Structure formats: C-alpha cells, structure tokens
Amino acid sequence: LDPLELSRFCRDQRFACSYCGKCFTSSRSLETHVRVHTGERPYSCAQCGKRFTQSGHLKTHQSVHTGERPFSCEHCDKTYATAQNLEVHTRIHTGERPFACDQCGKKFTQSAHLRSHLNVHTGERPYGCSLCSRSFIVKYSLKLHMKKCHPNNWVQTGPTTGPKRPEPGPNWAQ
Image 1 (tube, helix red, strand yellow):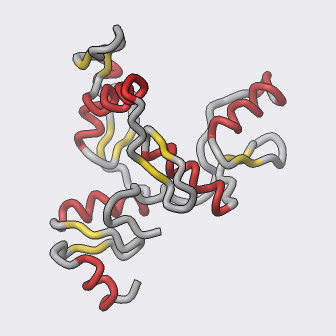
Image 2 (spheres, rainbow, N blue to C red; image 1 turned 180 degrees about the horizontal axis):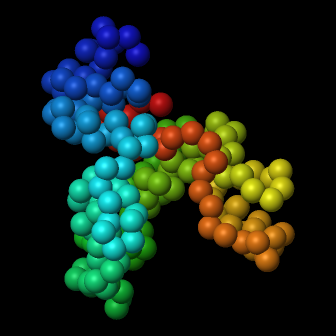
C-alpha cells in the first residue's frame, strides 16, 4: 500500500504496519504487531525456555507449569487456564462461529481456523512432510499423514514456509 492509500485506510488510527497495512492507535501496539512478521520473540519462560512475542502470552503460558486453570465452563466440567480458551470452548455449546471467510462464507469458531482455511482459496500448502514430498493445506492433514505413512518417525511439525499471516479483523488487509 502506498502512503496516501494508508492514510485514507487508517483514518483515526495513526500507526500503520509497513508489512501488511494493518492500522493501530498506538506505536506500542504497532511494535507488538510487527513481531508477527519479523518473528521476534523477546519474552522467554525461565522454566522451559519457550519464547513469546508479548509479555502477556508468557504470563498465560506459565500456567502450564503451575497447573492453574481458574476458568470453568458453565455448560460442562472443563476448565481452562485463560478466559480466551474458555470463550473458544464455549462456542462448542453455543454454536457461535464469528469468523467468516469473505470468499465463500464458511464460518469458523477460531480465527486460526479461518486463516488456515484461506489456503483452500490460495492453493498454499504450508505444511510439508520432512520425510517425503507431500504438503498440506492444514496442519491436521499433515498430522494424519505422518501417523499413517510415517508412524515410526512422527513428530509434531509446523508451517515450513513464510511468516504467520496477520490476524483477521476489521482493518485486516490481505
């Protein structure tokens, strides 16, 4: 996006990402967002070394080590470490699917599922098998492939190409 287009796109929000054009009301929010593109993870867990883009994500992660799960579902007996995880789980009971694909209208309970679904339209196959030439649109398909075709070598893997897509939202630019 050119600067003139960005200024019209952002309106009241003064800080625009030079990678994707997403707009923010503060420089701090923009700085945090840019880590999505750069891969920078400045916050590290002292117990296991896992790294995070935001201090709040590190704090949430630490419940893995403490076992604390203070958020309970009112519909069943499941508990969660974060309110966000409880909110996502609750959608199973309510049927809410707030994330819709703007290309086909399919709806999802989580933004990550929508981001993954977008590969159906682009043809991108970011989940590649490290043992053969197969690649997949969604991570779960790679997991099934590994269990079926390479059961003795199965390990959890992630995307093999490129940085994470920006979070879908009101100012989301593809």
